[in-house]
Image (cartoon, rainbow, N blue to C red; front, side, top):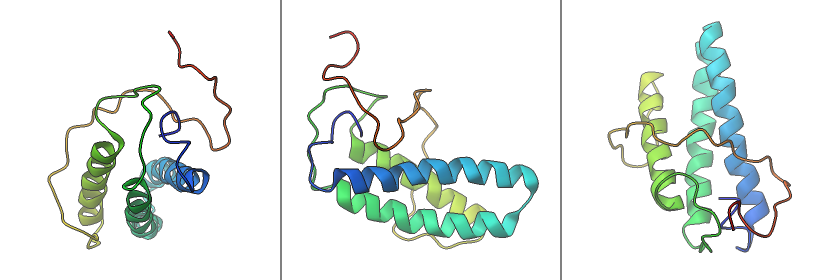
Length: 127
């Protein structure tokens, strides 16, 4: 998202929101190890709403394909995250927003998203 959509209006806010989803996922992982089901339920509810908001912001945008991270386009990737999040909603006893689909197998790779405000080179590596 950072590499290919920065030129879209409102990108900084949308990226900040998308990055907060990543941070929330890390938080949920920690809370799962602590057995804090109430905190998990609360954050999953917030994440579901925020993800749908971010998806709405991404749909009208266009990418410039400077650097491909993983496979698929941003809409496809966000749909995969949505399916996984909806399964998590059901796992913690929450009715998700939108249509539920079977969760795809993980395949996002190991590359970590840069924090909001990260400075990028004008060319991706290898160019």
